[in-house]
Length: 394
Image (cartoon, one colour):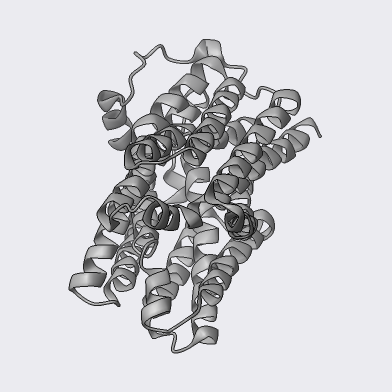
């Protein structure tokens, strides 16, 4: 009962924090362009630096959480996130906005720590559905956050920034009083030198047969999805002639379906099917969803296609980190899950770059077809090399 309560508390903590994230992300490019006159390239740099910071700092914060505990890292990063949103509200130049997103990326480098927290309080059989709680928090944050952001931005972009900061600070206060520590094995953690990016340790993890394969699979999945981050709305606007409201509804559909899958159905699916079967099913659905987005014909067709995509990603996003956690030593959960999140952040940098390039210079279908192609690669790698019964700890 105590562990179930802790799972609920970490879900609420992440959800409140991500509400602030969801408020700001949709209005960030508009603010940069309209209010500050920043170029498209500059906006791309501002968006990319967030994930780049996560690439470098996710492993370090995961390592710190193995040494010091999950709770203090979660608390500090929430304060950093709140501070970044306040800086956003006072941004009057490219440099200040850029620094605010750097700070937000550092604060947002706590997802691996949150996953390690869930690994601490769940059994291996419950791991996938536990990880699904984070995905559900993301989904719900992206449903409600943009709605709140759109309403508040009418009163000024700085108001939306202060609201985001308020949500993150509320999450900090909630966690401060309600979130218990989950890592009671800090004394057994290997005493590796603390680095921003430990190349030697990362190489060791990536060369482990099972963990390395799973991290590569997750990287490809995130890269495939990240191809459409900057191009999906443009496709809707330029090719399908959707309104801003229709594009917003499509993003809302993705968030709702993802939240339903990860927050509810994963409990049933993880009990009914093994992890390998879930990954194979998820990659098939994701391939179909990505591949048919440019051929959805109209709003109803695109809605059905992205629902299939959301089901696929909703299955994959908790399952693969859950598998990584299962085969990782108990005293290195934060470090290894941090490395996984680090490479997924790198995928979120590379995906939009290729997606934007291929959309502009090859054809509007190519970001989506690229994602579908690499998801097929993931299916084949999983089918031929991923054997659940062979998974062993480091």
